[in-house]
Image (cartoon, rainbow, N blue to C red; front, side, top):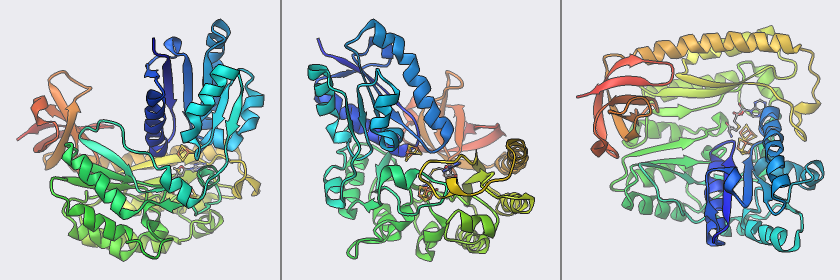
Length: 439
Ligand code: SAH
Ligand code: SF4
Ligand code: F3S
């Protein structure tokens, strides 16, 4: 009988893509994937350490597996991803029943580590970083049967070292995947019936920047836009400092590029942006937004914002609020600053109280809610293009899909529509989704 593994994934799209590779490797090694830890011979967690809360969650989850391990001493437990990369051997010391730790550049070694744990009862941790060529060779082959939309990784790692961020420390330096490979993969996916592609990277705008012979990100989008049968293109995440005019202009010229951009601004004041090492000023950012809205008047913008960065005062915070109103974000992911090991900001002096930070955070949420509500309500009575993805979670007779602005729409319709773009008239805008009628 096959051995069984249970895999749980935390964090961003990078980890979701990595988990596909983890699953594929273990299946190739003869394991069967199950959806409950209780039935598993091998439990794997793919972890995120972007904020302290995410990191603590990992230890919480591991604690829950302890009784299982006591019941079944042969159970193997492993941790991968960003917390594994950050902690390495230390994790084995902290969690005595943990068998193995594999870092972000060493997913390919997982089957070997599992085998050693099984046969020799050996505990192991691999966290070394690899160079560009090795990493390009290890780029996962796509294994998952895709549906309507699919993610395609165009780059890994990050070189930006924003002062608060652990990602460059746990993912290593930025590498771009050769454009020929990306284009070939998208073509294959489209042949398999995929309608929408989202290109992924921590900072897709600097794609190809380190290779003299590589095309720019805007050129990559142009080439992908030409693929017959592809209906929609998206990408995430963009860094404002690398958002070129050439790229902005794509929103006016490429018919498949969805009119939505996630463009994190993090903080509204120049003083804080500088301390964050973001590489742009408030006015640089606003100038790019202006151009985006000129070339694509119906573009919807979303963003990430950090509240409570060390030394942020009321004036700085007002500048953040002001930005939210001026730009008019359809949605914002708002975070309370969380100090991370090894980062520059963790050493900065911080004199704000937790209470003060929380109050600011709540004020920001309130404002953002008001802005989002007014933007989404402006869709009521409009007819929008919806790419149908599947059965709605809301009602049996409904299906759901997304607008180009990435908003979920639920409406009565048949599952035959899955994969097609249809016209839907919006009747209501709720907090997380629209509801409409097929026309
Ligand atoms: N590469 C992406 C985002 C990476 S992490 C980018 O540059 O936009 C996702 C978001 O988490 C960031 O945009 C930031 O808003 C938030 N974040 C990262 N580190 C953080 C920290 N130490 N505390 C609070 N929020 C953080
Ligand atoms: Fe982190 Fe900045 Fe890199 Fe984004 S660009 S992953 S916030 S260091
Ligand atoms: Fe988290 Fe690592 Fe992604 S820290 S946000 S899983 S790159």
